[in-house]
Image (cartoon, rainbow over all chains, first blue to last red; front, side, top):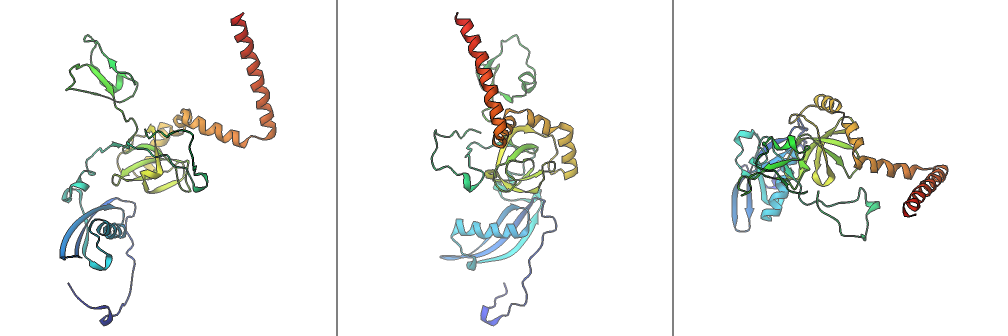
Length: 129
Length: 170
């Protein structure tokens, strides 16, 4: 990994990567190197997103929640689109089942906008869909 | 939902065709082999499920699930109701009992053709859900004269009903 401290370097340009097909769901495999409290580790994580940017954002959020890794401790080595057949992680594979369907067992009824939020309810709501 | 017990002489047809489109499944490990139990969850997230967006600028509009992203989000589009294809969280959707037959990841043209062929707007309007929405909207849009007319009609109905009830008691 090329190392350069911020003082020694110069940011030449920042460009947003625009997605070629933002309405197509893709599986992204992300290779990460991150510092935990007691060492630095490599990781490979998969995300199912519409754009590369969304996948990377999901990765940073995920690392922060699962490993308490701040973005400063994370180096993203590689982001690559992964075909359905090459997906490694079971939590992504379970979505790739053809003809997938599942119910939503717990329904929370929310108001359509903030103005119509009710503070009190007359009767206990039903969470059956 | 009551258990539908079939007598041993009854032929076993495919469950979904005999029981009015309600999904049932066979319980092979059930000792009473011929018992068909209805699935608890009828409204299921699947490709083609019609959903109503319940939050945001498009609230109240129907759309169709085109693809499933993960257990929280789906790719949803409503070409006939003006919802552009996009990722929606299930939090922002309400599943309806209606389904459109489309292949996974169908394009907008294919989806629109399938919706129109099935007359989704018509079958939606027939549901009591849609009728309730319509009556609520009508009530909110009633002018004073409409409310006056409604009052008179209700009074007329009340008189007819009460007269009939009294006649049965006499």
